[in-house]
Every structure is written in C-alpha cells, then in structure tokens.
Image 1: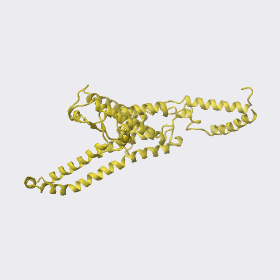
Image 2: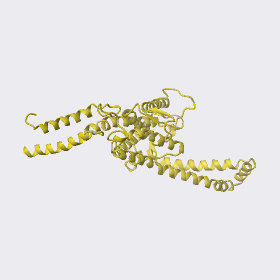
Image 3: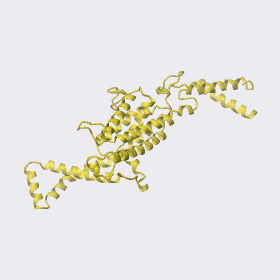
Image 4: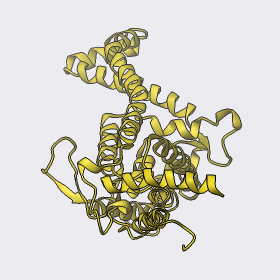
Length: 342
C-alpha cells in the first residue's frame, strides 16, 4: 500500500472494515458486534416491499374463498325451493315430505338439501383442481399445481392458514434483503413442492375409499405457510411471536417452537398415514402432511442458500453511521482519482 496516498490507504481500511463487519454478523439475530440488533429505526428500507408482498399473498387467497362462500350462501337460499320441488314430483316423495313436516323436521331436510348442493359444488371444483394419481398433470394444466395453494373451502381452514401466515410474516419482513420478489419466489417454489409432495403421499397412502380414487387433490396454502414458518424459525429462532393475531402479548411462543412443533406433528401424521404408527380414531386423516413437509424443505433451503447470504452482498449494512456514509463518498472520489491517474 506504499504506492497509495494516505487518503487512499484510509479508504481501503474502511472498505476492509465494512467487509469484516458483514462476515462477523451473528447469523441467528442479524446483528453485528459493533452495532447491535436491528431496531425499528434501523430496519432494512426494503421492509415495506416485504410487507406489501405478504399483504398481496394474503389477498391472493381471498377471491376463491369469497366466491365459494358466496356460492354456499346462494345454495342456502335455494335449498327451500329445491326441497319443495324435489318432494312434490312423485307420490313417494310427497308422502315423505308429509312425514317430514309432521315430525317437525322440515328445517333439517332443507339443511340437508343445502349441504348436498354445496357438496356438489365442492366436488366440481375438486374435479377441476384434481390430479391423476398415476401420472403427472398435462401441460395444459400447468397452472393447477399453483392454483390449489390459493383455494380454501371452509372458514376454519382459511383463517388458520392466514393466521399462521401473519405470525410468520411478523418475523420474515425484518430479514435483511427480504423483498416482495423473494416472497413470490418462496410462494411459487413451495407451492409446487407442496403439490408434488401430496402426489407422492397419494401414491403411497391408499386406504379405505382412497383405494378407489384415480384422481385426487390437496388444497390450501398450508404448504406455502410452512415454508415461511421455516424461514422465520431459522432466521430468528428465539424471537417470541404472538400466536393469536392482532392480540399482542396474549399467547407468545418462540419461532423455533412454533415451526418445530408443526414439523414434528407433520412427521407423526405422515407416519400414521403410512401405517407406520397408530393413532386414536379421532386423529384427522384429511391433512396434507407431506405438503407441509415439502413446503418446510423449500423454506429451509431458500433461506440458507438465498436469503442468508444477501447481507454480505450489500454495501455496508442496514445500520450505517454518518462516518461510514462519509467514507463511502470519499471512496468514490478516491476511486475516481485512482482511475484517472492510471
């Protein structure tokens, strides 16, 4: 460095110091020994992009759910007329309607009619979004492996997935370098992986009525949500998050416990589905455990190989002092001088 001027030597030292800061950062908390943890005042300015990305992801699940709920409401309104029309066509149906009315079960009959109409609508949607158990989807249905991740048939399924997405997003938006583009990439990759994992589960698990099914489908955003839960758990495992959205401090748990318990539950559920383990009769059998595990794998790999190295590729970090900013300006002038003199 003897051939450099004193100003050039000072700037090179600052550059080397900035480089070492990034490579000495604590991986689990995104902090540097000198500056400390990220605060509200020093968050990545791209946090707004990540926030908008998660808002967009949540809103993308609304149209199909709203349409199906509207269709269900319409079927409920149509049910009395459908029951009246059905029960008046033949002599036996009229006698059945008389018995139902005499026993005060007309409301029950109307509800059953409404449920049957709604079940027919669900079956039609499922047939459109279903896959062959024995072959890959044709190219004409390239959109299906992605679309199934944005469809929810019932309110409980929708709210549970959106609530879990909100919990994971509260951590993911603070990850350095996280933007809407990365959220889209994780969503796309985990959605496809979740669908592929479900197809594998369908091939391996054929019990009961499933043995007769040649086309099946798995719907819901839980595979995508599992991916972001994994990202949050690896990025900041000790951060306590609110389990009940919009009620801060009521129930809090660390990220590692939230994602870890979900992961172990899916492992157990998949082993039960494969008849490796036994479970109580009340254990749910309609959960896509393989889809959750596939999404988790994508989240882990994406964070380790894409998101985690991001801060080392940026300039000086999220928290820069006035001295560092001045040094960068001086460095630009020095670099210009070095370029013109050579």
